[in-house]
Length: 112
Image (cartoon, rainbow, N blue to C red):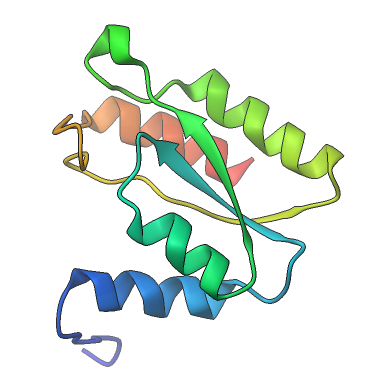
């Protein structure tokens, strides 16, 4: 295997990924709300913009796919370039565990 990266913890890995994708203040990363503060702090540190998408509390904190699509549209309307989408499985801080079907739907949205 050639593409294995080891880090001294998940937070370092997250920061490395965010640092790699954020180029300037026009870059935006979608992050679930509620969120673990590592994301908002790191995105700000690297000069990007965080745009939250709300998890559905009524459905045990699952993803609301329409909320994600709406946030992508809103970011583009503001002249932002969506460079990444964070999803955490199992969710932190919610503990929600995404199904295979939900992950497939999310992949379809990302592909669009």
